[in-house]
Length: 363
Ligand SMILES: Nc1ncnc2c1ncn2[C@@H]1O[C@H](COP(=O)(O)OP(=O)(O)O)[C@@H](O)[C@H]1O
Ligand SMILES: [Mg+2]
Image (tube, rainbow, N blue to C red; front, side):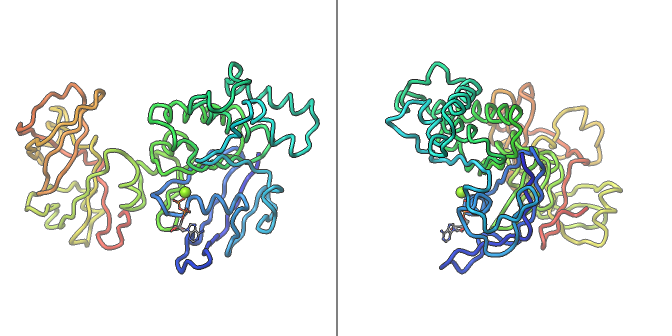
């Protein structure tokens, strides 16, 4: 296990005028599971590869266990990496694939056997140890790739979108397996993904990036409940948070089509001195139940339901607020039909307000 410190790390590739990573600072605790998440091209892989030592660090400092490693070769950083396109050796069996790296490192044979047996057991690959990769399922192959990483006694695991080649169902079961594995091994792990669900479900802490810049670092529910800006609020959670550009007038929120919402005292206090604001609300915080409607009689609004997505465990209702497409997540027992007009209220405690220029959360 190891702790990792990134201090003001920047990366500019040769021939690329733009910084790919700018001023990335983060302290990672021993044993932590960190997810780097963000849209394609935001600098996740670049950052991971700098930590691994596969890319030079343009400026800034990287420490592993308190030792500065900017100039240390990848092989001497005690890290193991699992990639999206893990290439297994096609002519080698599962056990040979797993033990091959140790042989190359000139580890004594009895230790190789012990380590390989341990990895095969921990990954549930006993039945398949003599099989070649072509006779394995995608998930089994991915486990072999993990096996190659875990036998190396590395202090740090780095994983770059390791599940993105698997089908949706397998991704769900493999993400659970990787979480379980981390609970057993407790290695410091950095996991790169563009999938916010993977980040939310696996990570102790999430680092959300955009355009090479860290937007927010925090526990999954911190990002979900208390996003620092509109980008974070919109990236985390599905369906996406609804956003409305509103005016603030006489203690009311005025939607683009003139619909009005009576702000609470607390909200008025928060928005004091502002004339416009972006209001954000998640689908599950738009409430159709009688209980909520009775609690907030001053702010009842009407929704003309234009589409219903039946998810099985819940329903997504589409309608317009203030002239803008909106989605609410409701209980599966909340039965309604397209064309129905239903009353709803916002849960005032879950309304988010953002500065309309800086897009930062108003606290
Ligand atoms: N070898 C390279 N040379 C120049 N630019 C690169 C190179 N590799 C990546 N980039 C650029 O750096 C940015 C970050 O890329 P990357 O770290 O791969 O993003 P991510 O993994 O988040 O999708 C992108 O704009 C990409 O085009
Ligand atoms: Mg990448």
